Image (cartoon, rainbow, N blue to C red; front, side, top):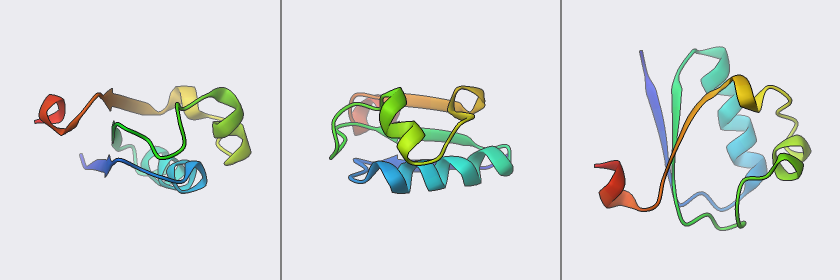
Length: 68
């Protein structure tokens, strides 16, 4: 299984697109804060077109040290 890691993502649309890829490939998506767009909310995720966000295996970390 693959893991996709985004360090301090800035654009919610890109996160949504990569989330779709992770879902399609059955990968885990790791998101490392701080985000350049605030928090990930339903509105931002829907705007990115990711209706199945809550079925995706997403793990959030406060910083890179928490990830390691």
